[in-house]
Length: 509
Image (tube, one colour):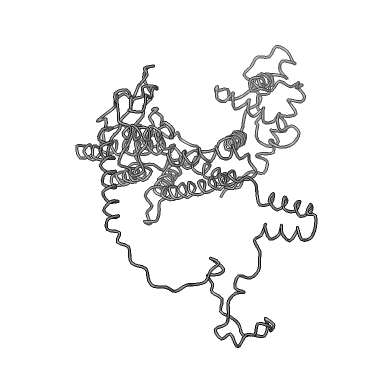
């Protein structure tokens, strides 16, 4: 690992750190506009564009530039191509300042650090879909030798960019997730809302994650059938690398590409047949969902308690302090803790002559005490075995009830199967049981976030019924009538598909 130069980030600390950072920012803004060098006046003008409006003399600015030059972040050259009309103009315009390679790296490092501090990361299914699409596109490009190598290079670059985004966002989100699991002392209402939203977000990401990971792994396998060296060779031809004095950039470029491809395999198709990192991500997300739900349950239970155990004991202590006498304290103790005399004192020895009624309790032999006294407050009683109850009729009744409920559920799903995209108002009039099933599906859909196209997708607990909910295209009002009343609301676009229709569509496809 290369060592960081000791003076690289000296500008970011100290009394004049803001001025040094603003100067480097001004040079970076100028480089984006292809201005590679700036005079003292141009540096001052650029400082205003990046938000530095404090008073700054020429000596202070020159001193700051000189210090940046000592740290090898800024380079100073003389401009002999200009025509100067006076000695003063020569002094002001002769020196030209520009960022060195270290200066560019230092400012880029600070910008990246600030970006990481401000970002929270994300688990984006769109990135997984983009990786799968780029692999499919590369497969098609490698199958056609006539395709321009530039297209192969740009597609490979997009694939590596999406992979970097996946790894960076996943690491940041996992860090934020672990900090959320350890969060303490936050406002309970905000804490509850954030964790509920996080659980919903994780559940939406985990849905169909295995299918996406399998699709990417299949794409990696198809590319390797064409040959990864062939892919990198064509991408190298399309990259059109510029010549570098004294060195050949090709070996480093190819080594970087091989490292990126090894990272892609580690995420989705490991060479050692070990678990892919994407599967570990699935495990982490599942475990986080369970942990968050457990924390939410504890928060909910704590809110249901009218008071805590600490408050109860403090109130009991105040009652003891206000008790009139010692006997009242004993009664209060018995009432609070339920302590009393031994419940087995009535038990007698099998041979009553061995235990005298007038003797000390320490003298006679011990009496066997049933463990049931501690748990139930009574001793065992051995009687005749009870008759076995005939439950055949009860089993038949429950089986008939279960079949009736199943038939009602299947009938409701058949009535709600739209066969495609329809308006909510097309349901018209429904019986109450079917209407409740429709409300349950709509509630599941509204409980999830819409995807990039605005579609909300939800499935039942058994996964046999799926609903797609799209926002209404106009202001029409849907009116659904039931035997118990009328429901009016926005006329959403709804697609309800049952397990049978989904199987038929897959068979047709």
